[in-house]
Length: 386
Ligand code: VJV
Ligand code: CA
Ligand code: ZN
Image 1 (cartoon, rainbow, N blue to C red):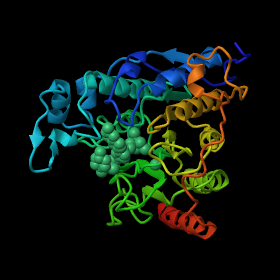
Image 2: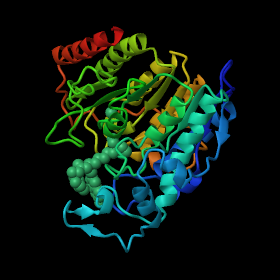
Image 3: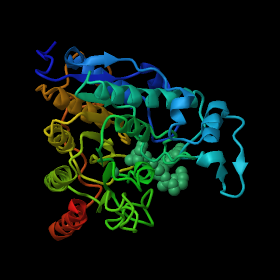
Image 4: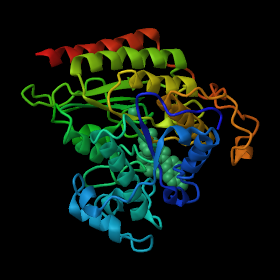
């Protein structure tokens, strides 16, 4: 099995339900649940499953989904079929913001309850001390709101998982490296100091989804609210590169952990921040994306690792397989094992670390700009010690 052994002194659990991977958002929709099959095939081909506890998660119950979401919205998701979705003339969308971005497809409710169940199972493995790191690549759907779908997300599994962690943990740090702003998670915990949210993302209010997450959106403006200064945002321009991204991530995350002192961390690893992503606009390679996971792991706190965006499936699968290897602390050969299923899908790039496309987006992040962002974050953190 390529000599991959269980990590010494800690346990990693891997939560994956193959039932989800067959789901289809529609012909040309960018979200491809099939990327999860590719990920799992690479993980298994390397023999990484030997080093982890593997769980096939159950579906979350509707009651569990209602711990965050409004009852009528869950009832709608449970009931609606592709043919009977109703147009809402007021909002010019279908009900609950479903439509082009969030289509109603066959098996939608099953899909939602499976990825949510996986994140809940993963969170519970952490709280009952059966795992030190729990991985759910099918989760991380950070845009879903209490009462509506948004940006390919229907159920906010991250919010549900954090609510689980909060039953046992006084403070949870949420870190989001998806190229989009983690608005749903930020909004859910906006007015509490028991969760600090920190999102790195492309920011352009008018042109890039969802348009929120400016540097000065840091929580309720009223300093008397416990949530003040507990929502942190790292707005970025097109084309950020490996060395810049790693340095920025470390320069921001380290002081957040030092000041906030979380007792658990949730890391959303959206892979649309990789270079060459169909929807993304950064120039980050797989090793640099993984360096963020490795850095967070070093804090040795209970860690929930989630997926998220990622729209060039062959790169998503490589990144998440590599990040799985980092979680178990295994060194894997850069060449994909010869017996990897679907190897032909990777064309000429049978390596875990292809050179990702750097030609589409020029780097618009100057050193001075990134320094000013770090200063802005440090300024917010100063309020925490009061
Ligand atoms: O930019 C938007 C919203 C619009 C309205 C709806 N049209 C389809 C697109 C423009 C303003 N939505 C974003 C949503 C991005 C969600 C990212 C999710 C995550 O990665 O953060 C977490 C999982 C958007 N960008 C691109 C598209 N939508 C898009 C949607 C399609 C599509 C092509 C692009 C939907 C269907 C089809 N093609 C066939
Ligand atoms: Ca993000
Ligand atoms: Zn995204």
